[in-house]
Image: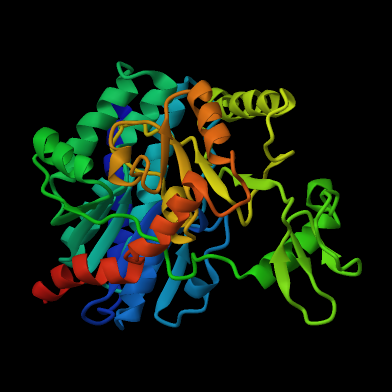
Length: 427
């Protein structure tokens, strides 16, 4: 380990010297470098940050991996420059801990060199996690550039590592120590929940401002005509979308999907009266057992239908326009919130979400959705919500009506109220 530490010090010194030699002139006051040591396309919150900064005329360097294509608004914005870094392949020689140390050293040198080549920023806005080694590298870069370091805390990296290694593993303990130590060196901090804000202060003495995830303006209810075009296109490939249910329509020539029909004379689209419910789940599966919760609940619900209760004949589990969303996100720390639920709420889509510690900051039980603890409880909720479907009665409709009436803040409004004043007061 001593040899590895010496190699790291020499490597960082060499990279720092080379980068400073190639150092450019300042790129203008107010420039911000937004850093993600991960896939930019799968980092919507940091893309939103970049777009908000650009909207206020700031030059933005968006730095990260380009494994997935970023949003078209980001790609087409003239104030945003994307700087791609390559995702290093792990070394396949030696013990796992040795491979990990070598990868961290290589990432540190790569990130330091890349950041010191860009135009001088006034601020470095860093996503955490992943924070090892990005927090330390960003701090060094800010010392060189005399920039302000802002960390946006989405979760704790060490709690995510503990899902694989266990909380008492040496790597997890080192990551926990590292995160607390270097996290304190930041100038400003944002976080995603009030629970995380309190935890950062109590355990790390880090003062943060809560910036809740909010839906972007393009998350909204899909017009019925657009839904119909989507369903008809999907019906060409997927059997559940085909018109195979008896409807009360008197227009035999209407263009039909399983969910909608369009009058071929006037182009008017309506939802079919006998349509099935459309259910989606748009969360990242962390364990096979998470998905089994949904499958078990649907099996119980299917049995409920087969027992002769008059309910919808089919529940389609797909991604798309929907009647209900199911969230199986389990926070590793209990302090972050599922962003996909934020997007669902932006579309006025009610949600059933699995319980964890701070979920109440987003999902209000019996107001905009329901919270469940296991597959049995989810199955009961599905029965209750779809009991009168598709009539405009019952809790499912009330949840959607509450979401429509709530007039939720969008990301741009929330960002302008929370982040913009901080940047302005420091210039």
